[in-house]
Image (cartoon, rainbow, N blue to C red; front, side, top):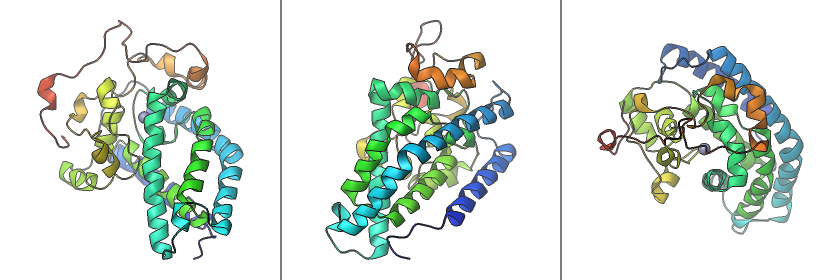
Length: 291
Ligand SMILES: [Zn+2]
């Protein structure tokens, strides 16, 4: 395969649809967190509606810009990886790793910059977390990420092939670590040395601020490890998914989620009674994943 070619859409498409179906099946058979705040079908339908608008934003705002840039990178040898002649496999591997690292940085920014957080909160306000949450990103967040994505491609030197490989892998990874699938804790601990797993990302979706400000990686775990932002020691049964200010299903309906960035922002990390969720110290003594 040449660098100027993309992965065949049928291949990415069937991997993604197959993984989505397999995860939904596993979530029914072996759920990780048990919660029944809302009927699953209602949540799934809402998340897929948010996802459809997000997909439209990517088609309209991201695809034309970013795909054109990858072609220019290939033709004019732009970016870090084009300064050296690398074998195809190595160039694609490095591009995927650097895209993954710079996505980590983007994710930190979406939490730290108030103008981005008001969009990213629509993702975190889901009262439960499963494979459908993986696709629930506000179309505004996706549109705002276009300049970042363009810079990633131009600076790293991402070919059309590398971009399509990364897009497929990151989507598979995001679906996997948002899924509500209970893996044996030993298996997950082993996997977690390399990639982000459901328990690890569950901690990122916790309503405790310090826990949400950890585990920002989307693919490889190493970025959180290097930055000292890896947190594994919270028992999954103790995690309350979501942000403290939105606790009622009526507050996170489809229209409310879509208008979230455009209305007056609440004190997100405060519960409705104005207290702030904290974790009892006794629960956080370990430094590894807990059942
Ligand atoms: Zn986040």
